[in-house]
Picture 1 (cartoon, rainbow, N blue to C red):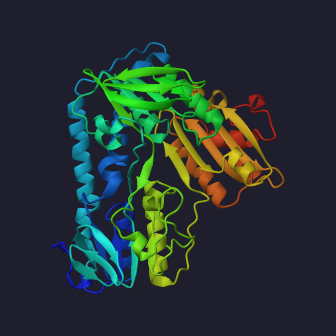
Picture 2: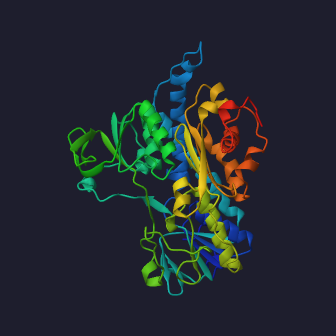
Picture 3: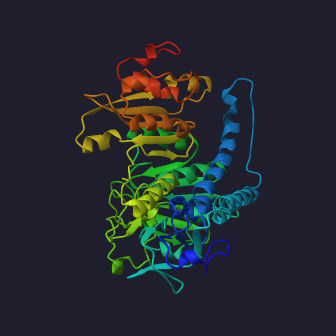
Length: 476
């Protein structure tokens, strides 16, 4: 059914059909409309996709709420100050979160559609056909197609898990009441963000991960964050295999094997599965259309975001890579421009920043030291603990560190990794430095404002050639 706000004529033979009405889908449709194209935007389920409905927006507002509880308890680090805060009404907090989600969904998705009279919104499952796309029995014959169907929580094959009412990131953020205890399967981004959130809300959290916390991060940062989470009371067990999950009269019991083969059990009121995300590729008719999947299940695309079928592109989480909402929006714009203007743009994630919204935040851009070595690069690194960053000293919160990775011969910055309060606001400086090909010497010679977290990047750049412990305040 075509949305009443949109022109129905554009669905007859649109220039472009976009399958998926989340962040990537809207980005592709809007860019195509700006280029003068007639667009059929096809959604199935709640408009707006993951980020606004069940991902970024709801999780980050609850995470920030839980931070206020922690900050109250940490206020005593300043002499003469004492404060307390408690989770008085979780249900009210969730309701406030739901109001925010509904408002943003309306303002940033539903209300945008009437602004673009060349975008026709259609609701229903879509399937590729030899001539184009079928939606609810309606045949579309667009010149080009972009698939932006996103991803969903990945559920591992663990014995008994399908018989237990487990939580995912989606359902965990919608709980009416807080459990007394929570077992989390996984140690990645969702696991650490929600683990700290629930722990600060008063839940007893046990995190079970196969290798280490944030295994994709620099080991110095991963280790430090794990320590800070432990300090807040999270029981983190690494090197764990989950053998089975079963329901009990009081909740769930997980049978585990530890490193060395030692067996044991973990009991909790609830279990949260946080083991990554799976691209939504089912039901699209990809195989019959000749569209290949990559090794991890996402749609295979080249550097122009073209699939293996001529005229069909894919962008965002459905490709199984760079699963961040801003990369989905960026990739969708690239795909739209290529679909309409001759494949002239290349998808480039070299300077892609990443933020994990723990406290302190983990933020990174570019290559880790290990990734650089895997590429055969000769690099060196410098690490500065926040103990040397004046902002952290003045705030009496020196949790964290900054690590920079640079080519040994040229000094060119290839990676920046931060663990610091509000690191996400500072990492963009490093992203710009990498994008522009700056060296650590040039970064060190750049003027930074004093008593800011981002000044730590300057200190880390200086640390390649100087002992920053011997620098005075504001030493250039």
